[in-house]
Length: 111
Image (cartoon, rainbow, N blue to C red; front, side):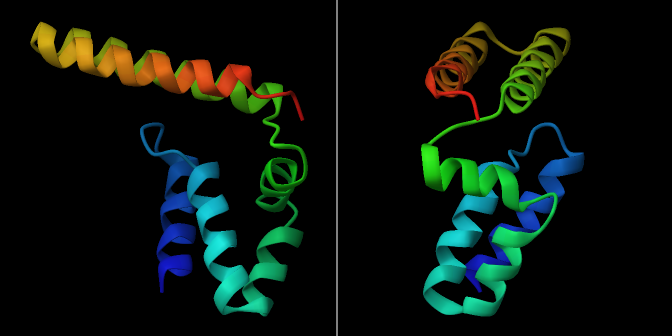
């Protein structure tokens, strides 16, 4: 059940810039590895979804394109928060979380 929910959230993340894709796909692969060999193999060998999961599992790496897309998404979300006039405390927390996420993403090796 957790694998299917994670897969669904990951697929939604392809279209929704606020929702991360690859972390949910990695979680789905983790769940499927313990519950369904068939779904685990399907996910890892999927032509579009499989490569970033394999890159993470094998090398703890993120592709340069994914890093840029994630960074642009984070910048867009923060810009939207600014445009909507969120309080400075909310913006500070959001900036810290997004900054930490960006630091983590850009500190990983390129796939």
